[in-house]
Length: 285
Ligand SMILES: [Fe+2]
Image 1: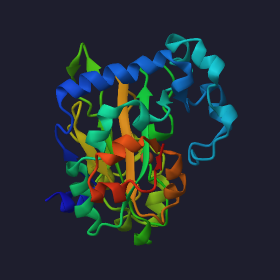
Image 2: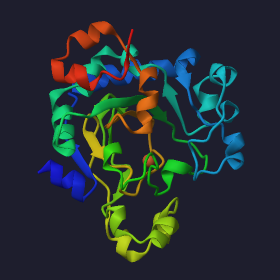
Image 3: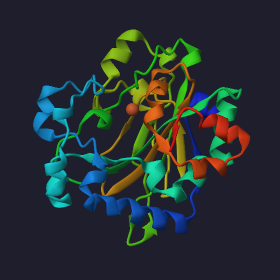
Image 4: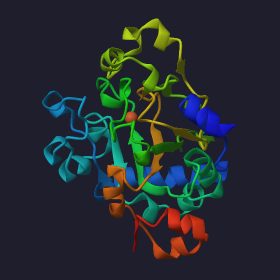
């Protein structure tokens, strides 16, 4: 069932991947790092918003990000100057996370999608998004990830994310992600250009009708194809804490950055042979 949904509609959900107790533990561990400036990276400084074109978000220089001095001023300050920050080395910091990220449940969904076992874990990040008054930016608009020429199947990737957001220690509705369930192969070149980085209001009815907002709660895992299906995320209504993972072919350029993702040797030893192969591109420390 899921292989079809992921291919046809561009997304697939595994409900309740992470149990509530672990969500509470991980949420508390993750949000503690908001008070640790050294853990924080990649908060885009809004001051420089006009300097970069959101159509090319990967072309970012260090000066466009908040620096250590900004993080040291505390959450109240930096959450007004950036929409989100990332926590450094998540797989090293949160052991509890690894048993879910590298679970058979996730592996099976990917195995069904890729139809063989030559796919790898490529990237991990934890991002914390703030509720603030800053304008929307890149991922808030409908876009396609441009990680490869999609006619090249050898470079396929799938992204997955798990929200850990809680309110008063309880699971909440995290349905803040939208995907247009039309493969870009079925959209004309002109319309692709028009749709890229646009808002819902500007979409033609044919695409508007195909917008899905998957029903996601804390601890669910959502898989999606970011290259072939337009997607966006709304600005959050609460503090949003999310794990992002990317899995795919070695030939994708993301694989060049996989060695910068670190995991402890001790954790790797807990995995079976297939998962060990799957994690072979990330660094063991
Ligand atoms: Fe994206």
